[in-house]
Amino acid sequence: MTSFKELGLAAPILSALSDEGYANPTPIQAQAIPHVMAGRDLMGIAQTGTGKTAAFTLPILHNLAAEKGRTPPRQCRVLILSPTRELAGQIADSVRAYSRHMRISVATVFGGVSHGPQAQMLQRGVDVLVATPGRLLDHMATGSLRLDGVKVFVLDEADQMLDMGFIHSIRKLVKVLPKQRQTLFFSATMPKEIAALAADMLDNPERVAVAPVSSTAERVTQKVVFVDAPQKRVELAHLLANTCDGRTLVFTRTKHGADRVVRHLESAGLTAAAIHGNKSQGQRQRALDGFKDGSTRILVATDIAARGIDVDGVTHVVNFELPNVPETYVHRIGRTARAGASGSAISLVDREERGLLRQIERLTRQSIPVEPRATEDAEIAPEAPRPPRQQQQRRPQGAGRGDGQRGEGRDGQRGQRQESRGRNGQGNGGNGQGNGGRRAAPAGEGREQHAAPRAGAGAGAGHGRDHANRNGAQRRGPRPEGRGQPGARREGGRHQEGHGGDLAGIGFMNGPRGNRS
Image 1 (cartoon, rainbow, N blue to C red):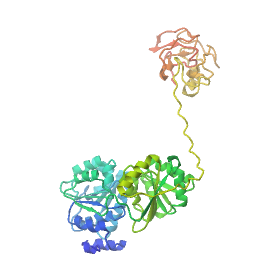
Image 2: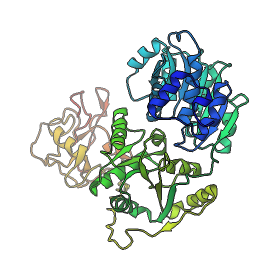
Image 3: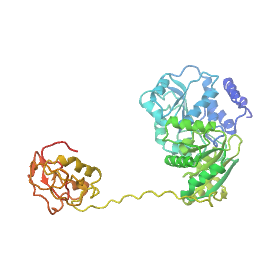
Image 4: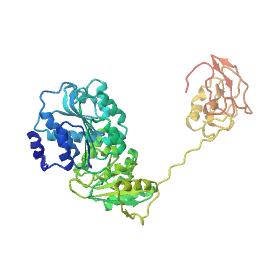
């Protein structure tokens, strides 16, 4: 087939394609559209940027155009699942663009925004629903949506949907879908184990593979730079300032790693934004919009969030860290060199990642050229070492908690606060020694002398329980020299015993219940 018209698409769709400037189908579209129009299940494999979205959207709209009647409330006729909010939004935009001359309702359901407007939209019923699995299950649990009327089920980016933790959600959804339905799987990569799992959900599917799983885009120039992990951020900043002068996408493995990279680039005077799952929907959309309109030249992303990045004109892809799955490398670098343009992919590889690099080279059946570090001769300031952790030392028996000289922290403050609250003692500890002091404080020392204790004749500060027991010491240590005589064992149901010296200034839990600090 050499044109969309030859594929037999409905006239309103052809008119919308003409408005978009599309005349000829891509290879994946030419092969997939006839099977989907015929109602067959399909597994489509093609590189990113080859037109997978139109490959399933166009024939679905063609079949909907032939149907009559409205979708019942709280139902949808077509369900398209996406791994990310961004990709869900872009798929919905494509559906709206191709159905602009048709009376087709389109809705999106994803997290990060309020449930209310989505529930109201679902209440009216929609023809095409594009959703992420988690929020879709939420609406089903509240009764906002039923799936018993779904006629076409589409799983986009199927490898990531099944491989990155969505498998249980998808199985829940498949159980409530009608048995008689059309199921479509589309993805940029499809490892064998994932393909076997997907095959269980498809009924005698047609398989369309435009490019092998291991192939990379022909127009992408690939390079590797060996650099130690501590110097990666310095090398990245140098590359982005001197080599990658166009729209650049940087990949990290983790969300926190993406934020750290952005902070380093901004400290180097480069404008960058991060997009990952910890960002709110508004933050993610602003970062993506800035990347699209050129106000932000550098976008740092994780693999899951990048599934929604469909931006033309990406000149460079930088792998700040290599992915753990070799097929993901193929997907990453496919973000550049789209629509016949050329692009460059640079990978920063440390010693621990060389095994991952060998796996990628085996998968792609090519050796990636190595380039020397751009900052090899530059003076690189070492990263500031993390402060050492305070090692917990075992305290001697009966020792309190704190500085010992100043009575710092909570317990020292307690000694000061309670110098006027000594319920069964003289309330020593006016010097702020608290129960942290290991220095014995003779009775009577402090800023203020108080009346005799209500119960007990202890000459030391009142202390209801061995406070050191709360901090890991033994409950009752040996009696220190100068300790007062024990007072009455109980008064008002509380254990009382006068302590002095080592635990001066507590006045803790003795006598009738009063204000407790």
